[in-house]
Length: 144
Image 1: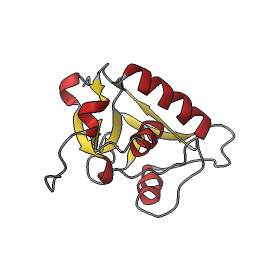
Image 2: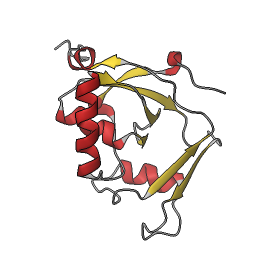
Image 3: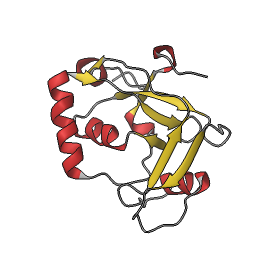
């Protein structure tokens, strides 16, 4: 299976659940680039059942800073999709990490340190462009 622009949906920022902290320096650089581009050029990868962020923690953090209502994401069946593999980054202090560990952390009030989980996916995310204006002004579910 190959992801396309049709697989990208705009999901509520409030539904998303991080499992890992971000590096503020990396976030700030990406925030500056996102403002210059005027939008998002890459979707997040998210578990469709829990809203756990698999890829895109810095983009999620930017959405919070900009008070965006929605972000572009590809929602996947994380636990059943064998083409998505989780490992650890070298030097993160852990020998291994399971998909269950990622989901459990995303549903807790705690976060792994930055660059703990390393997800590998068979498919590349498609190039997209969703303007910040569209993501900021997207009506919420309650109509506001």
